[in-house]
Length: 269
View 1 (spheres, rainbow, N blue to C red):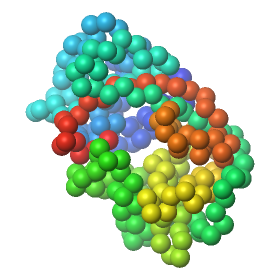
View 2 (cartoon, helix red, strand yellow):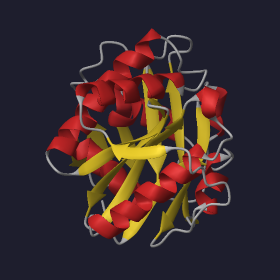
View 3 (tube, rainbow, N blue to C red):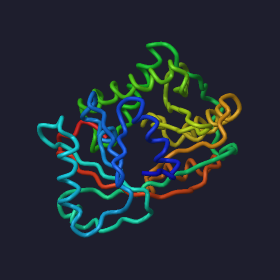
View 4 (cartoon, rainbow, N blue to C red):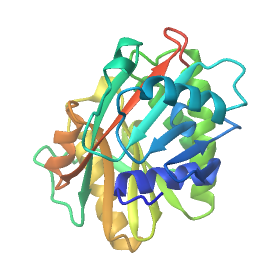
């Protein structure tokens, strides 16, 4: 199965590093057995949007392709088309349909709400990485908040740190008076830089921290890491996309996904 979407191509960078991506012809099977509660580490990427009758077909296929689950506690299906397809039967059975916009940039511009008070640096020490995990947990969406989310984040950050140690990218922190108030990662594949998990602490939002952090880290990556194109994703209805556009990113792709998880007990995204 050929992947032309930049955002999905760069998604697979992380999947291949921590798990496996198996080409099944009509779909890609993404498995991360060592982190089975990671929804976006255990999912199916189809070539086309769902058609009538695919609810039963896709859910049965998921059960078959993930034999390490004694009980199915999540489903995630994605496809590259800018089309929701025949999703109603999934929605009737508790799934959420999400539209994601991928934004790209070959250069960036100084944002209108630039915060000159923050200091930005790459994370190196154990304490710095620990602060980033704490910040990410604080940034969790309400529907994912809970003790299980921190477990997931720690496993995810173990992967990010290993990728950093192997020279595949960097994690950056934004500091005010020595306190980490925002963080993000940028990892590379084929001269493409992929942003990961941009997060600003809830107590420090609306101060231009996110804009400034994205701008400064993008500048550094374009200059130092031989990156030609920067890629990031955002929920199409979430304000973050507008923040990224203020730095010079342009919407270039839209794609959809369907997801379900055991309500109230979901531990990850």
